[in-house]
Image (tube, rainbow, N blue to C red; front, side):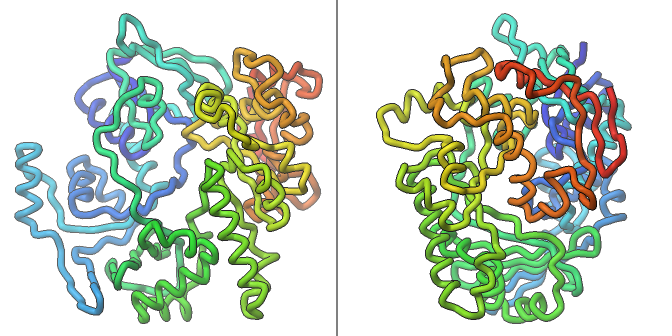
Amino acid sequence: MYDAIVVGARCAGASTALLLARRGHRVLVVDRSSIPSDVISTHFLWPHGMSYLNRWGVLDQVKAVTPTYTAIELVNDGIRLTGSVPPELLREYFRDLHGDDSGVVQSYASVRRRVLDQILVEAAAKAGAEVRTGFSVRELIIEDGRVVGVRGRSVDGQTVEERARVVIGADGRNSFVARTLGLPKFDERPRCTFAYWSYFSGFDPGPGQIHRRGRLACAVVPTNFEQNMVLVWGPSDWSREFRADVPGNFQKALDFVSPELGELVRSRGVQEERFYGAAHAIGDAANRMVLRAYARWQETACTDPAAAGAVPRLRHRIEHTQHLRPADVPLLARLGVTASMQPTHCTSDIPLTSRMLAGRDLASYAWRSLLDTGATVAFGSDAPVEDPDPFYGIHAAVTRQQPDGTPPGGVDPHERLDLDAALHGFTAAGAYASYEEHLKGRLRPGMLADFIALPADPYQVEPADLRDLTVALTVVGGVVRWQR
């Protein structure tokens, strides 16, 4: 039995485990993800955060691989200011909160989460915490009104139960722990901005810069791997127009807010990664709004010789695409928009949708209907909101039933998929959505040899048992990475 189980091993969970382990507690920290890996995060650390890393003894590791600086440049409508957080203010903050001001530093950094999380996880393990990644918590064990442990699935597919004196939820904004316990939100901020960012090499911007002009802003910050994070943000009510042409509007925003930075990125910047940002739409009104935005972009691009080539090249998509008006179903195929969907949302949401959407004329989780119109339907899990196990998603796509077999025949059974279509959604369609169909999604000469071997033929398994399939062998890039 552990003193504490921490659910979530990213920066919040790993640091919690680190501090508890250093106090002599027996700690288990679990995370469904593999680490190191990136998450959606602008990963900018102010001196307060850097001071905490220093107090925990890991700042030198961060600085060894991440550019740092002691001042930041702010340009507001052409007025340029350079400065930093006053040291005495930092010391006062730590004295008020912790009773001492040891380890206070005045530096800034933009450290990628794949770097920071790995450093913190390794520090937690060194302090004595047991770290298990690839561990999916499926259930909280509750006895006499108290959470006394977790039940989950290990990386090798085994069901595991662990118990502790206290269970700590550090699993992010969409916390499984908080949702399971129905915990109230105590500090919820209204959504007021959108943001897009990517990573560029080829230039040295110096220290971090933040530029603002009117209601738009941008920033450039040196980060890991000899790259710079370039970020643009603005008010949420402008997001629909912005995402109609993210690359073009990104550059236009840079040129408007800071002509110097815009020219630097245009003339010398080499974009190393995609733009981080996508259109997420769940309800029918939101999906219609996004489809109309894509349609307007396509109409404009087709009449502009400079942009016309982008129409067949860009693969717009909608994340979730859960509820559509029947008249909108054919639009995805017509516009070339990929429906990026998560089958387990359909089955997890059955209690919610049966209550809130009863009587409405909607095409909900309309996988079959979308495929019949010729649309691309790519499947995923939406982890950490849902379990990342693909067999859970395949089961949901084929049966449209909850794990207990309800409702009989599945919800809206006419939208069920056969196994071929479900597997295609999780493999070839996903590779197409990420522009990687030449590398992934199929087993062909010249493509990556990424595949798994199963102990049973899924085509000979009853549909209700698909979610119980396990993996016997994992091969990545032609190399056996795991074997039962």
